Length: 180
Image: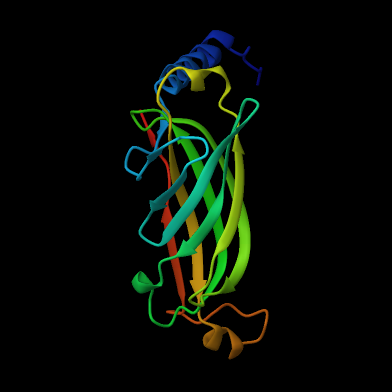
């Protein structure tokens, strides 16, 4: 049996077509936070953004070409399950956005857990580097998060390596969406 020569045109043309389609669609994709609460970015002024599970109090500052934020994130315990008495992990994302909610720059940090006492708060500091596009209009700040809450009582009843029992973990998240 003789091997047939490979038909490169029959293989490459469909691959090029698929690649062209994916590149054409990529130009229309944008990250949006239009659905999240926003406050205007104003250096030196204290602001607060409240989400369903977190309140972010911050002051904005300009440092060279970086847009900075320093503040405190505090949980909103009234909306958490009554058994959730600890934050196991928290990732905070800050978004610098235009008037339409399109993300110009973003940064995130992950923090270790803490007990959810009445004075619970997580200090944060971010610097965003939007580049020259930032000078072209009004900018605002929005916050997103991913938070994993748990029960100290349920965790203490298990070996250290075991997963927590069903019904003793609560996950909450708000963040950006991708739009075409």
